[in-house]
Amino acid sequence: ACDAFPTARDPDVETAEIWALIAKAEDGSIHPVAAALKGFAGSVPGARLRAADVTITEIHSVVGRGVHAEIAVSGAPPERLLVGSASWIREEQLGRGGGATPAPGCEAAWEEVDSMLDDALTVVCVARGGLDGGRLRLVAAVGLADRVRPEAAALVETLRLRWGVRVGMLTGDNRAVALAVAREEGI
Image 1 (cartoon, rainbow, N blue to C red):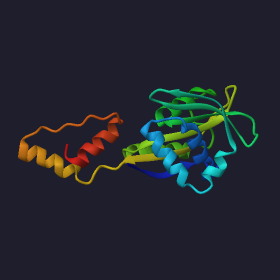
Image 2: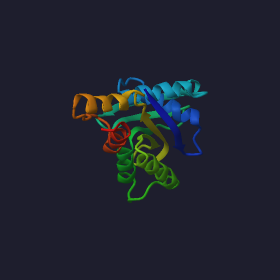
Image 3: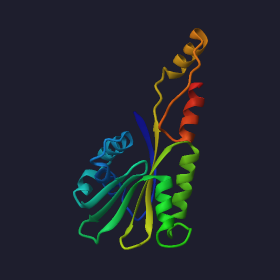
């Protein structure tokens, strides 16, 4: 289970539309983060209704990064949609459209992303922009945190003190998240 924290988002894009885009992009994925995002999207008022306005014409999973899609929303011209890791979205945004600065209006959103990363959250970013080399715009970022089972710290302590077990942790999560969980649980 995990918790989602409020999104940093572009004020020009409605929350329901952002969650509709996320739900559509992650629809076929079985990744645990995608499942969490789809679950949250289902609870956002209007997101299901807005999802009907989104047409995905092409979609690709980028292993370890996220999802890249070509979308059209309510008959508007097609555009690129990326839903994935902050590092990937940042690389894509800075690498396309020339220059090493965020697209206009994205600076504050990237500051919020950096703050969520500093808080050891798993951050999923949503960017969209024109095709044919148009600038990608960061429109949202969602911070996710795994809920550690309440009894985990006591179990670690029992294993260590009572049984003399040296406890370690294996995770596929990013280093900052893993270190935060390890500290919290006494590992």
